[in-house]
Amino acid sequence: MLYEAFVRDTMARIERLPADDPQRRGMVLSLLTGLKQICNHPAQFLKQSLTAGGVRLPGRSEKLDLLDELLATVLAEDGAVLVFTQYVAMARLLEQHLSATGVRHQLLHGGTPVAEREAMVRRFQDGEVPIFLLSLKAGGTGLNLTRADHVVHVDRWWNPAVEEQATDRAYRIGQTKPVQVHRMVVRGTIEERVAALLERKRALADAVLARGDAALTELSNEDLRDLVTLRAEARREALLRDGDEE
Image 1 (cartoon, rainbow, N blue to C red):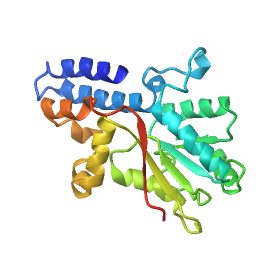
Image 2: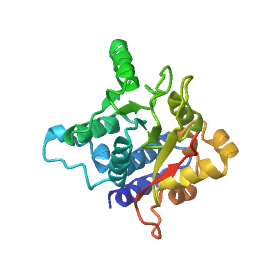
Image 3: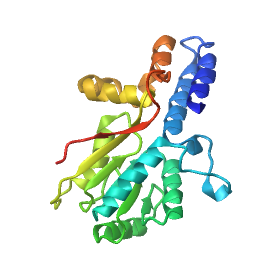
């Protein structure tokens, strides 16, 4: 399995370095980023694209399969959904997948011109496009997207404030409907353990994870290995952690 192989190879290199070696921090960040990408979709980690030809997206990522189910439900109910990811590369994979399956959508990222950004907001608010893909940073501020009745975080930003700021795009003045928030996590992986920290120890999480991945570079080798090791007893599958309706 790609996840386990990446943990094994990268941890072996990390454990050969002294704890105070400047290279160790960079390698830990690379490990954390790579594992997040693998949890999203192997194609993101491997830098594969549908445009390259011969690349299959469905059936390789539990998150993508689960997202397809959720989007089908939202569309059947004539709803509207914001889909956030912290990675533009993952957003583009989702864009390619939805285009291939004929699902109406649009993508906003940091490089989107202001005029097009405004047009996208208008199309979404007018009900022309029911699925709005957004990179987390580009969609975190300055948007009023009250037509959404679902918000999906495909991957978790480990600074809770950043994630909540993005979610708040649907909770602007003028929102008249309940909004359901869905957070995707892959069982048995680093995602599930960090999600558990965020949920059970929010005050501690705010203090420790305020710097995101950088805070985790200070873990000992033993604690780091425990954090990233795939749990043998857990089935590797995506699950939704639904927030309360508001």
